[in-house]
Length: 245
Image (cartoon, rainbow, N blue to C red; front, side, top):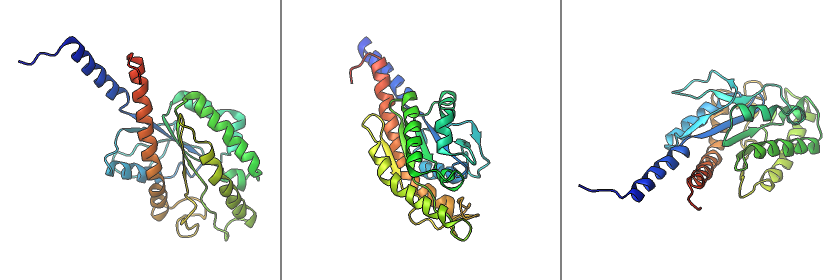
């Protein structure tokens, strides 16, 4: 019979607690109507196909997306503007209600299309929103996407060009906001996305090529964010257990 010492048993118990505490990563998709679309289901399927199953999609909104055991929760609010979210503080309430470890963010199309907001105003709103995320969780892992193109046959050239202009700014803005404690992964959903063939209305991804392209673009960054969250959650668990890390 093998007898474990008290110390060894304690270490094993601590180890199991750490694994348990770090096991489930909370992921919040955040934005406007595009976030409410079903690329989230395709992304979950891709993650599970690579044996990444330790995540829980969180948020106060739900969508009816097809698929096997798809988690429908998100914080995609149709018609919303980043500048409005920053002004109202809505995100803070959603973070309190469903605290995430990872945020997947695609937000700003309506600031250009509906609000006609200058790029600097939108970037300032992003600053506010990232600050709120990190105030809730100093180790927040942030997947930051640029915006999908608009079909110029359906939308004014002003908006089509405005999306391009804001995306140019996001391409440098998002990486510049990354920190060791709270990394930011930039995702380019604009490149190779066809606003005619990949949408059902010139703006939102369709249920065939559109959602699949977005899920594929989000995959690697989301994997990295989940792994990063696991690491920080594990370290916090060790510290609570009195282990120096």
